[in-house]
Length: 336
Image (cartoon, rainbow, N blue to C red; front, side, top):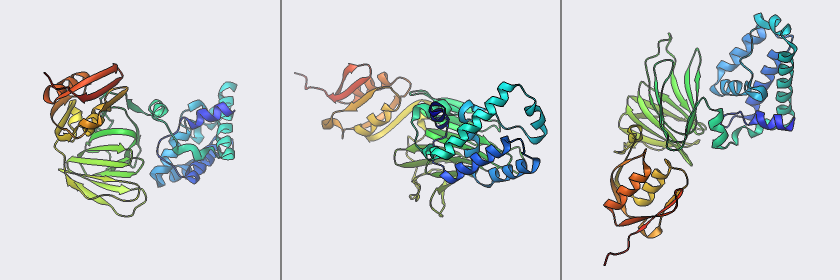
């Protein structure tokens, strides 16, 4: 059972969910899986799920607990479930036991503690290190994943949401064909970004989330703040769970990764190396004595070795390859 509990916890999202919300979701799940569940119970559960984004997220992820069973059948199909093969009924009871263990042991408190490796496995879509993916969502919205990113797609009758587990994405929203039109948003660790007909980038950083807008506008809604910040085309801003910073002019190279390029304009070498390092495995570093050198140019992200070689052509630098996965950028000795 302890192994099953670990597997259950490993199937959850990166967004830190309130323990009480997960507890409520687990109770709804157990209630609907019981033999006494009614149509009224199903309707009440649907109402609870629609009240908040976190409710729906907790519900969808608890569906994956243990055996990762599919969406619960409606009451009309309850009789068929009761007469299903014993193996299916055992699976149901096993899943309920895992939910019970989560409640009794406090396992729900672990929902916010994640590693990127298992998050990528559990995500609807993910990209590896150095990989960039482009997807078309059911409503026609274009989604691009930058290197080492993962998302979940949460489309319902009332909303269109993308849950950003980690990494960076570019969104080009499409008009919603559903009437009334459903709002489009990106939810992450620090809060929510509401799209107002737009093309924009959201990047979840170690400390905070950055947003860059190329077309239209978005609203930033920090998770623990009542204030909302609007960002228009040509602007960018960062926000944390508690507050949003002021909007500033868009960086020249913002979003260039979607074309497989890194644009640098007087960028400190240390920042350049940190950014390029996102697209390759292993360690990429620069020596302290060259960290403040300024880098300008256009560099390929799909061939980071070539990008590094180009760097040495523009600046008095050389590459120290200990291995393919441990590279240092150091000062080039003066030529005699």
